[in-house]
Each structure stands twice: as C-alpha cells, then as structure tokens.
Length: 129
Picture 1 (cartoon, helix red, strand yellow):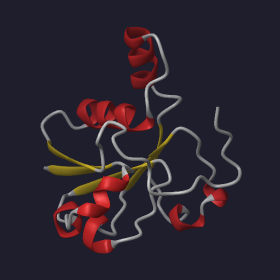
Picture 2 (cartoon, rainbow, N blue to C red; picture 1 turned 90 degrees about the horizontal axis):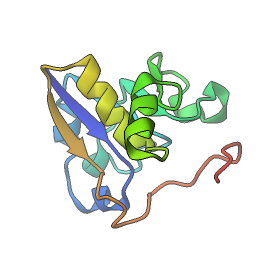
Picture 3 (cartoon, rainbow, N blue to C red; picture 1 turned 90 degrees about the vertical axis):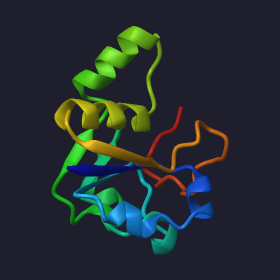
Picture 4 (spheres, rainbow, N blue to C red; picture 1 turned 180 degrees about the horizontal axis):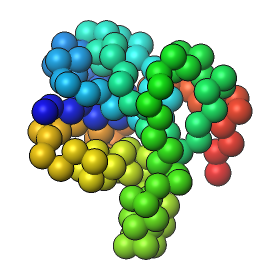
C-alpha cells in the first residue's frame, strides 16, 4: 500500500507532483489545504487530518467521510509528552499514518519544515493562537 501525506507548505506549488500524489492508494491531506493546483497538489482527498474539524465550516471538504482529529488523538498526546509542546497537525498526521498503516510506503509532500509559509488562508471560524 502507498499513502501520500500532503502538507501545506507553499513550496509544494514549485513542483508538479499532483499525479504522483493521486496515484497512491490513500491520500491524506492536512488541515485546510484545499488543492489550488492539480498539477502540483493532485486533487484526491481520502482522509482529512485536522486539529479543528467543522464540517460545515469548510465546504470543499464536507463530502469526505474520513476525518482524523489530530488534536484528540493518542498520537498528539504522546508527541506532546515527548516534545513538551503541541505538535503540528502535519507531524501528528504522519504519526497517525505510521501507526494505522505500519506496512505502508509513505510519500510526503508539502512539508518543508516552515521554510515557506502555508499556501492557504484559514477559515474565519478557526481561532489561531
């Protein structure tokens, strides 16, 4: 099994990995990263991983049935215990994929460790600290 985990670094738009992302058996997208470029980001979303989930608040994702609440997960709790601070949604999503699909080949896109900002704007209902 192949899983694409898609983060939201704007550097994802610099490459044309959309077809590779969508060729995976499962595509996990993080937070509110609605694809804006099919060439760069693909278009599939099988699982949405987010720390705040409000189905009606982000209509582009309301049709997807599989949601992972990263904030209320054992992976978030364990990473918080180890790190001493709240981990990012993307890191928790990667840990969730590792735990739920231990034998999968995982491809990671749109993660550059904060070298570039995210490419999306937060929905108005999201409260940012």
